[in-house]
Length: 355
Image 1: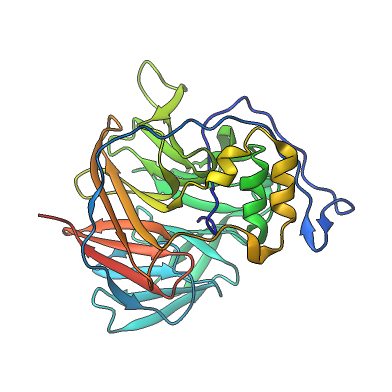
Image 2: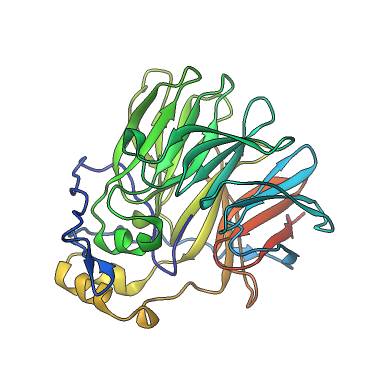
C-alpha cells in the first residue's frame, strides 16, 4: 500500500525507534503530531529512459482502491477499501464477492494450499478460503505489536514473510510516517506452527515483500527511502541485509515474483522534491504536515512498473501516463500480461508486456 504522492518504505537502518504516540499527544487539529528525524536521501542514479508502457485497459471494480492483485485458478482476486475480497474473471465480465474482512485489505498472496493470504491494515494477517468465504486470523492486529500489515510472500512450507509498515501511525495517517521518517517499520516471519519473529526493524514504511524462487533471500520495499532491501535466509551471508538494486526514482509499493522469477515493483508516484529538499530540516517537515490536506502533494498520474532479476539488475522499466488509472500499488505478471492494482482508482489496469 502507498501514498498520496508521498513515500512509504526504507531500508535497514540503525534500529532507532520512536515511541508510539500516547493518546494525550496523538492529535493536533485532528491529526497526529509528528517528530521528524533528519536524514539524507540518496539521489536516484541516472539511466536510460523507461520504455513506453502501452495501452492500459481498465477492468472496473465495484469499489474503491483495489490495492493489490492476485491470480489463482484462472481468476483475478483483489480487495477494496470497504473490506470486500472480490473474485473476477480475467476479462472482468463476472465479479463475485467471496468474503469481507471487516477491515482494509492491502496485499494478497496465494498460500501453499490455494487459500489466500490477506494483509489487512485493520485486522492483521489473515488466511481466506475463497470457496467457502471462511477467514482465519493468523496474526491479529496488535499481537506482536502488529499495526499495519501490508504485504506478504509465502514459502514452500507455508512460512509467511510479511511487512508491518509503521509502529507510529494508523493507515489513515500513513503520510505522517513518510514525512516523519522515524523508521519503525518491520519485516516479520510466521512459521507454519504459528511462531512469529522479527527479521528486520528500523524500516521506513515497510511495504512490498518478495521471496526468491529458491527461498535464499527475501526482499522488502522501503518506500520512504526509495529502495529495496534484501535479507539473506540461507548460505554464507545468512542474516545479512543489503540494498537490493538501484535506489529508485519513485516510491516503491507492493512486490511480486513473475512467472520467470523476476521481481516486479509497483512504482506508485514520483519522488517529491519538497520532501527530499527538507529531509534534514525537521521544522520544515513539521510545517509541511501542518498544511491543510488540500495543499499536500498529490499522486502523479503515472503508471510505472519495473522488474529486476536475482542480482537486482533492471530488466523491465515501463512507464506511461493515464488520467483515469494511476498510482500503481500492486503488479502481477501472468501469461505475458501485467495486472495492476491502484489505491486511488476503481479499476484494475491490464497491460501487455512488450514483445
